[in-house]
Image (cartoon, rainbow, N blue to C red):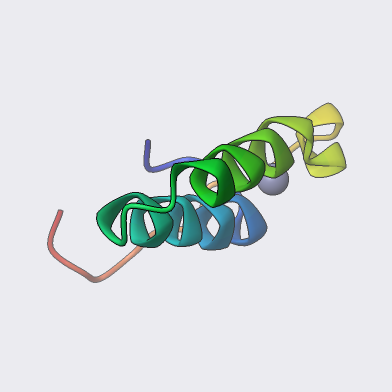
Length: 53
Ligand SMILES: [Zn+2]
């Protein structure tokens, strides 16, 4: 997903990191945090990025 807020991107990155490290319980924790992120109840403006997709 490219349209998530920065905090969710952060959680998603930590989620991937934990998964790669084989720490699945931690990965699940971050996944839950990302899903529950309260910012999702408000409008999240899309931020154009100069990075390659
Ligand atoms: Zn969020």
